[in-house]
Image: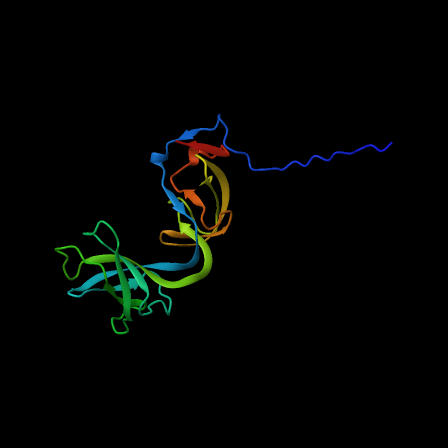
Length: 204
């Protein structure tokens, strides 16, 4: 007599959120989307406004490296009078002002009324790009070349799962993702440290 042997296949799927998981209000959360593409690398510079019509500025990098000032590269300029950064671009490298690593910027956004020549400003200037990498607008507490834990929204549900992420280079508001997240993931960037002992949280 032949004995039939039945094989049961068990599929191991990620555990979904459970009733006992903590509840977090969606209204208190900020969520950023993971992207793939060319990630611009920005460096800090500071200087003064040269003119207001047209609005132009002279800035110097905090740490000089040759080749940082390339005409056409984008810039984000911070003026005390403006509540948000103003867009701009590099116009030219300044050879004759006696400060290595200096360049002239053109502000392409309208400057606030009352801005005067000589006002001090800070800038983030694009110096290069990381081609075809995964990145997103980083959480405030993130740091370059580190490992961290974040919560990722579960598609089609009202929950988020904890994930371990390995970061690469950092650039202003952006950070490179080496491992742990994929393009299209929606990541909670609000401080979630009080919930990190849980694998899932429920959102409502």
